[in-house]
Image (cartoon, rainbow, N blue to C red; front, side, top):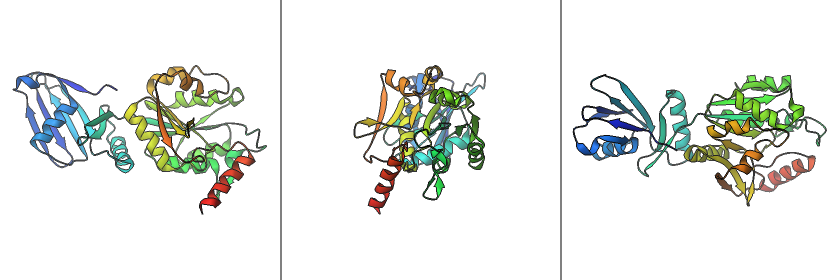
Length: 304
């Protein structure tokens, strides 16, 4: 992923402000003229005045035209908790050139607005009833996944469904509802509707029938996606699973899908996959049959 850099001239001034203090770097030194990266600017700041700010605003001002260009870098992202903090900061700032990472480790990566798309317009033929509204631990399975996703700082949540109950859940959790009136054509229709409704750069596709999916697992996948900006998916014991995150450059391929394959064909054709490893076999377990439910309940009882 390309990291922002500034074209510097002798007369340009770089202002670096944090959430608690700031300084001005004047460019009179030959070594600082030319292509000057965000990380190098931050490194210079660290040499001069080591701080532990939540974020830094780097603003370049052309002295002749007073034209300004700026980047915001959210620092100290070292674990899922600090990553979540960084996501909340980025959502509140709403600027174009947002980066996050850690000055201490030298990591820097662009913040991509990422949408979560929940696909809820299937027919549950093997179950004989709408499995998404079957009770699981006192709550319909679809509502369970929506509740978890709404606690993660996604840019937006999109719910693709085909009936009033799904629409009502979308309203309850402030998700964007998209009606799928061609669900009979297969899962690809839900994928395409999710892509078209998304306002973000990245998209994570979530099935509505993974009752054991945890908030922590979602955050881990989202963090890995932000760092690598390539197709990101969970792997358990060598087997790929979902949810799957796709970057902006895969949107056109997703819109060409047909039938009931979902995004699997795009994953299959990709030469670069970011595989995030997990150990729990049931963490990403889909409920496609009553046997699947029995297996999940057996796991829960065994853990208690």
